[in-house]
Length: 411
Image 1 (cartoon, rainbow, N blue to C red):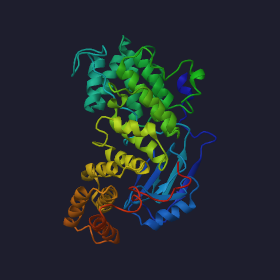
Image 2 (image 1 turned 90 degrees about the vertical axis):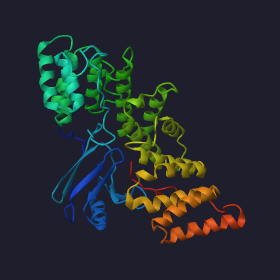
Image 3 (image 1 turned 30 degrees about the vertical axis):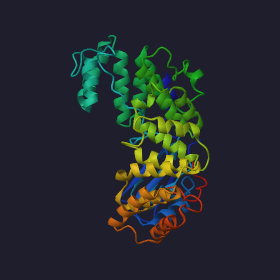
């Protein structure tokens, strides 16, 4: 059975660490794709001492200027749980199940288009189940899909796929794999194979022979299903740290007329942002082209992070005007505590580009908010005056947003 390949218990070469903290956090915020853990409600020295004692998360860093201090981990493929003052870390050999912007694509299949029955609310068990799932009515969906599965009609592959998805949502990986394993043949079975590969140890490339089929094959599939399978593989590559492979695969299927990312924009924003981040201060032409080619790249979930990652790259390329315009465009999304440094970074880039009109707008806005009491803002105002005196800005462009020393050991 294919499900036997799924690792639900620690494998022999997995690493498990129980990290005792000096005080109990009120919670944790885990960004698996970036390999970062924020300990909420504790002082920064607690984070620093935790890193000093950890083998799996031995560094600390800030994501952006003014942001909180976080643990930086050696792996993206790990589970993190908190119990009292103990942080339990376990590495895996597959991408984790996440609930943030890096989660696997969540696609609704139109019942009419995919032959499941009539339009929502549906007139068959499969169409009713799909419609209920789209509404978030999970219990109703489960009952309808169980009925569809029991009937063993032409919709049973869809029922098995979606019952597996419901198990996945609940965190029951073993049951999810069991349902995917029963999906039989057809387009929904191909989707089940891709999901099963996501749950299986080392299945990005090497498991194809063992599974007796290529779980990532999209030949002959409807566009939506092919795009979903592609995005799941792109995600798996990213969590394995293979960002060049991830971006190359995504670029190969992206054209001016069609982007697979339309199916899951938040996921693509996160993947491309992380690909740009890991190549900070180096050329990343594929990731940058993908970022700028996304529909509404900076609007919606993940937009701010992608904008900051793009700015890091355009700073490296010597394009302060573009960097400043991107930062200005996302100012409304910036958390209040990070706004002073964000506005300063925007003004610095307009000054580096000798764009006095826009620099003045940002400076005046920051002044109206009382953000100009720091030495950094004094330097910005002084540099602005120099533009008037000399007619041009001198010196090198400012450091990019979130600039910090290289975080060795961080994936």
